[in-house]
Length: 108
Length: 113
Image (tube, rainbow over all chains, first blue to last red):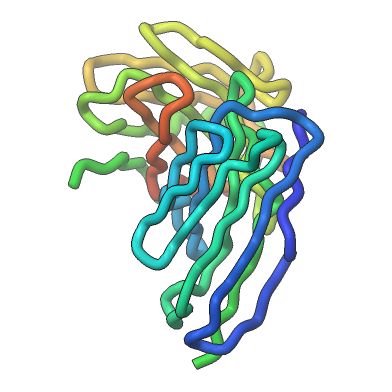
């Protein structure tokens, strides 16, 4: 299957700080989705991206569909404790392939 | 807000037994999916289903797996003869178009002993 590598693997940040994470692959994808998953729960959709170069916001979250279509970025501004969780990217090539995840810890 | 629901939330079964995991997708969605997540790992695609047919499946979805839409609301995943390595969270998802955003259910934790 396709490999989607997310970095960083984990982050520990102070409340109020901004967060940046990315998802890269050697393959081209047609759609990128970003999800957040809390322990023991299902992934919750945060943002969907459909065109190369697209920049989309959802509250404090902003995501971009990379120009090369091989990557995507997620930024969270002014982090709060409830941002804690694992963030997954998913790229579409026939089926959705999920990334390896970025674990975010926010220190109050 | 409409949501995907799944039952049971936790299923414990013995190796070799058959299990059926149930999902009720979002009502106006036409595309349905099953995913698996082994503890601590990434989400893995199993199968997509549209118009009463499998439209895509992964190499994980072998002959021991089957899916069905038995009525207008339910979507099921059957594992015929469970193995220890089938222990995982199983997520159902639905979307209203192929390649569109998918909404996930809360998952069923399957434990095979």
